[in-house]
Image (spheres, rainbow, N blue to C red):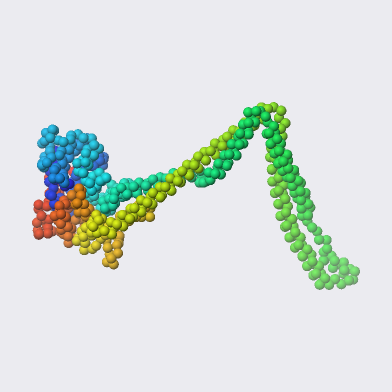
Length: 598
């Protein structure tokens, strides 16, 4: 399909635009010198693409200028006439209010002004928006896009400034990869269904992994073996059965024996052991305390020397020295011994404190058990067993709940393994197809890649490549890169103008690669010549003419300052017949809408 005419029910305000079958240029002239340094001029050249998108049934949005200023445009209706591949014509009428009702006219000949036609001439009137999209998709019958609807392709046919940031991912493709990557893969020549299934399976795999992790978090990260839980459940059920049987018969003999056994064999033995240990530690503390009393050394060398002098016996210095050393040695030994005794005493006191805390609890439990045995009232025993039974049943419910979760966990793991296996098969199939089309120069991908490189080389004198590959997460990656002087691909930043050129080259190559199937034949590039050097602008214009000669319809917008040379100034310059609309900054008559700006 190609564009033929865009107009409104108010031709005095919005001048009708007739598109050329080949190259079409929407030219904005900056005639006021003061405006030449401005980044934007608000003349409406970009708005043309937005209105084409609107007539091709873009969804209604409050941020779109027609609805943002609805009071200004409430009584407007816009019409877009298309020339279809079979040579017939289609006119789409869409009023601003309500904006969700569509009129469609099919004709064998062009209709220059559908506003003058009687109602009965229209094929469909006042269609609901979604119904109109389905009908339009069927009429256009773009088999090169199927199984997707025509709207999926429109973003590549109407490149706005926001869509030059990435060759493949348009501004509106900000959602999940599965919403756009399978479509791009199909445009590049891969089969649609495997790519769709690959991303659908990857999404299922991610959801299954999320369920597994969520279940583990509910368990507190404790992954318990289901067979262990089965064993615990079995034990708990037998305990419940025994307690229930006792309550049903009011026969407490077995429970009396069980409690008696616990008292005699367990509690009594433990209490006796602790009492004995408590006694030993108390005695140890007492003996250690006695040992730690200050030791006295009664021998004093000075007194001994005086005594010897009175007796007329010599008390030599050596003897005095030896005794002094002996006393010092004795005191050193006593200090080490006292430190050890203190450590032992501290340990013994800790044991006495521990046992002193434990013994009252055990004595209390023994008292309760003995009370059970001595209770002559059946009701007391019944009450206690009922409480135990309630606790056991609660514990059983918890175990059964965990067992159910364990079963669900096992099921999820089986499903996850099956999904992994299926996903691996799909990855292998898509990888094999990528290898096949990449090696073939006659595949759609091979042709598209060659056309893309030819365009870039014709404009820049530098080669570029397209590539598709499988990434580590099992998804598809698409790259459009320049080839460096060494022959290696380089993704280095070449500036926004070069990125824009890659987008333009891809769109043109895409249309050319699909000339053999029902596909769009037009493409709109806003500001295509901006920021390029004059020689490169001239090269791009030659490429656009070449593609127009192939039967395609390139449509570009440009400022007069972006043209490499004035209109009609040479054989390579833009010709006056190429210019389908001229806008300027000398008042309202030069704007797309001949009214004061909003």
